[in-house]
Image 1 (cartoon, helix red, strand yellow):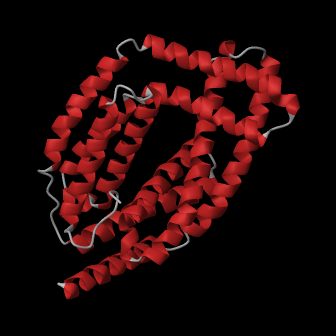
Image 2 (cartoon, one colour):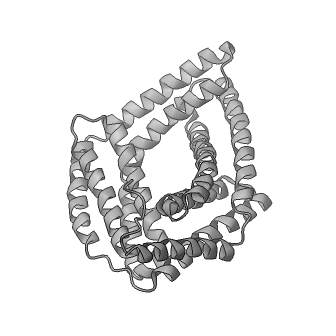
Image 3 (cartoon, rainbow, N blue to C red):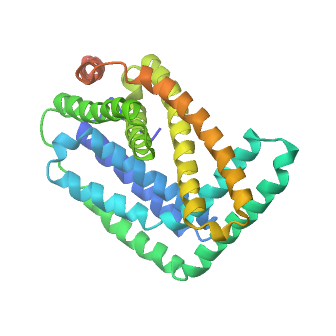
Length: 305
């Protein structure tokens, strides 16, 4: 697997290899003229997120490079968000149709699907320079790929990992605590971001103790699905309430918003139940435990040599 640290390489070499692979695949996806452009954009944005998760785990060792790298890939992803957001509305609608499969809702869902399709098409038509934008990004990524070779990660690898893991885990645990006290879309979104980085970190480190970290991944995956689906529905709600003229009769919008609210309540309840368990450990203890797994893994490799 490419998004995974290997036992026979240094931490710095692993980071450069993984980052280089993510950028290489993003370039391939952008250059493939036969691919569905919506799907290609989705895949490229996912690679940018994985890359940002990667640099977070070694943030203490990147020093001043970190902010520059993180901001560049964050902004590059945002440049592609318009088309992706329109596509995600249709995906969220499809999930609502599965959840509320009563035939009584069929006409309602069909009407909103037509509206979301029209919005997506309008965005594509308005973005007349989409292909040029993708070509420009591709060229910028080719330059960025060369820069990865010069990334410097300074310091003790064990300590870098411990500090990087602890910082992200702590921010996720703090967001969860605040969320219980003052629920809001913003805090659910913050928990989503932190749990996604947590997921990426466990994927990167999975081989250091596969049975334990695979079990961790088995609960992080559904947590991120719950939080991701909830975020998409929050965006959909915002779209419906900010531009109601796009979506027909007020009574239909109200009924649709009621279904969204019911679905979000279920998603949030399931997410919080998992998150409370996933973040039950103290940040310092969590990071120290993973650091110990890493050191034992590295020691085993040294003994083989």
